[in-house]
Image (cartoon, rainbow, N blue to C red; front, side, top):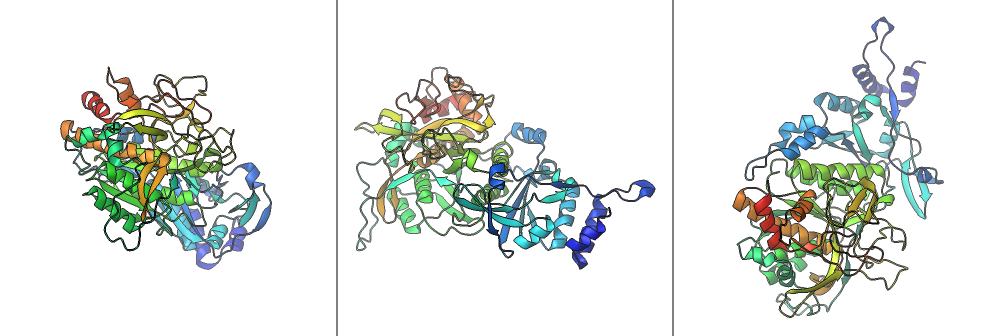
Length: 578
């Protein structure tokens, strides 16, 4: 049967001419028999079958603006080559020179443009050519992909998705690893922190308020307990180093200014809006910025922020933030920078395409741009679905290219020395998590055990040849934060992730100065553990549990390898890094 009558029903005028031109471009001549028919394939968006079979309760309005993102397959050999290349701090990395090899070729991109451009859709390709942004009305995409968008009711929530699998030319589909934004099935990310507000500052008080509660941990106490101040004494305060934050809320400038004045912050804070500015300040960005600034007074903080109240797939916007970091650092991949993320959701609550897309971005941040991505392991203990007894872990902390950070309760003595530390957890109300059940940890259902995840305790009675988390941990209870004009007590692995991110930034600053090298990636932490030779890079937390997995000697599912002993961590790396 000829495809032309079908095309006439779908398209008209210039759109038909454009699509026909695209078909002719893609279809080789088959001798005297004429062109072969175009091969069309369907796109699997990674939504569970049960959800796609859920009742239809409405139609997505045609005028709805959809942000769609295409993640392209990458050459794993080239990615490994980029990971293995010699790092030269201070020199431009020029990753864009390799982009056409890592991502899609000019020929493939032209095919894609020929498919989308006739429909009036604008495209934006990332600098590494691995990520494509498409923005269009639902009606335009429905016509192009030969489907329609409907609303379905599933597990007490409504989401939109294509009614039937979208259709694409096979030659285009073969280059695609994931497509996101055609649905909003995935559960929105959850912040990983709890906040207890203190006394409101009076409106008459014009000077800065630098008097947090004595019951909270101050940055200098955390720094002394974990040895950060020993690096300060070496002149390492974060100069020329950058921590990149991935946020879905904003902050109040007055809160940050008060905190910066109190600690005499000399670094730089800048914000980058991605897909629009955040609509509210929920405390997460405030916590992350202050944790970093309090531990590195001269560091550069770049806060990538987006709006958590968007009605589409929030994970798409989180991935756009990761892609923006990649774009901004294609020429700066040898600087020892780090990324800190304090949000997540249970693996089973996210579509596989959202997971694939974010996984690839984290891989590229780690292997191509030599950054370490620290991610909070979650605050519902061993039950990230928030259902007590349902063993589950948080993504993207479970990603095999990230460093998952769990939480502890740090108890300094009267001199500020680390006197005791236990797993952060609270099982007093097992009917509701409320980000208080404690340090997230367990076995991933998505990612397998990595060869580098090897330490005493990793192989245990709970092991399932899966990615195990967390990797490390840090203080996650009663930390002092200035928020909404008052000092508050904050807890959660949201605090632990930026603590570790700042620690590695300080370590990398010293390594670059001393030996012109730096370390990165999750494997680094297991390498340091294996090269300790009598040193003590981590404080092993052996008391408590995350409501299921107990803390033990060595690695465990509640606190990983342990909390930072940063001076020893630094010395071991300075001696052994290759």
